[in-house]
Length: 603
Image 1 (spheres, rainbow, N blue to C red):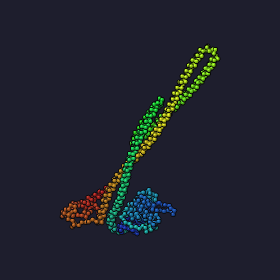
Image 2 (cartoon, rainbow, N blue to C red):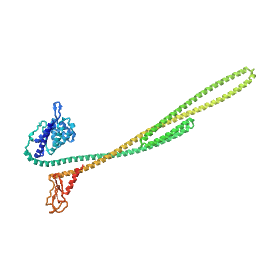
Image 3 (cartoon, rainbow, N blue to C red):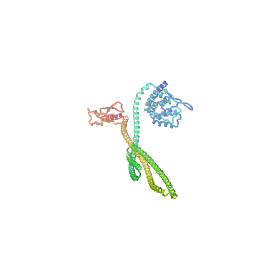
Image 4 (cartoon, rainbow, N blue to C red):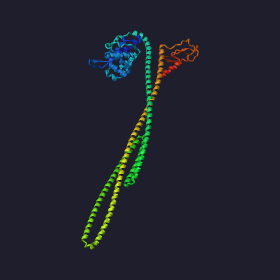
């Protein structure tokens, strides 16, 4: 494999050298029938086939050059036009024919060396098509690609469409490279002169083509930047309108917040009026209820204070989210405390109910005692009847028992008085208990109404808290949106600044490219002999200092502009594109050429 690579490298050197020499002697433009050009394509085909892996197919084993050449389209977008043209050719049926057509089109485009250089740099992709010791993967491939750069001086005019590239037989003709030394010696000087002139012309053409491509690229980039700049200006105007709308919405939200605060204050005043009425009602209740009312009043004051704190926190919510969260936590804590107080009030209500039940039981027991005393009275009346009966029966013993009877009557009178007193006291106690029961019932009703109002207030407060939380979330969302718009505005400003800087850089590059184009034009004029060579008879004074020529002040031509100057005004030497050796130039051309050289040297 190493010997094969060396032989192929030598053949490539011979074919490329022979093609360049014969093209310089024959003419710059070559066609498809030129034998050295045909031998060059045969040698390149052998070089590309060296070490190519065998691909299995339905018809057997096959070696195809079209596979690695298709990779150039992926590595260089400019090669896509060649690949598309090869695929569209109607007479090509085999991959080998497509590869031969691709080589001819790349040579006509003068990009064959560039495309193959990109291909050999990607050895990871070429390893799928070539063996490890193939020519394209070794140093010989890089040497051949370097030799192909010299083919850019040749203009090839090949007709690929009508040529049968599928059935051509690639055989190397060695007889073309067996030349006579005498002919080589005779044509060497002439070929060197022609080659130098043609190389200079080709260099200028290539430089002009590259500069035109760069100018077109810069122009397209400037157009795209102008379009993007206009779009960014429109987006900036839209963002400013959105910011104005958001500010108006923020003002509306602030006005709504003030209305909510006024409504909350009105509700607070109404609640305070209700509390004052309830306070007047509770002053007439018992001491326990007074204590409960005082406790409720204290809690109500705390609630009002907490509500004021909540309103203050609502105003502070616009600037600080953490304070709002803390206020929400405080409100939840207060709600829990209110629930605890409601539970305590319920317990006290249960105690009042228990007291009412005890009073009812005591009243029932007093009724039972009254019944018992009535029974005792009835029994005493029966005894009195019995005594009167015994008195009738014991009339004889009346005088003897008179003392006992009077005492018994006194006792019965005393007993009746005591019984009447006790009955009155019991009646008074019953009336007092009934009054207490009615008062407790009224207190219970008032307490139930007060509890209902507290529950309603609690429900309203929960609704206001939920509304405030939703409004706080909306305000936070508006703040985030406002910050996001500010960030977008800053990003747009930075993008605009970057684009302005890029436009300045593009302007500087355009000015440099214009200077280069002027240099190329002057070089073309120099090559074509376009400068006006002023005759000695026509010049009597120096072009720069306008001093008259004499025997001591001699005439000197500027090799750049062709004008006549004195020795002091043209005492400068610089190499020109037409002559690589330093020649005499005037002070004006010297300064201009130095300025252009410095602008070309700048990055």
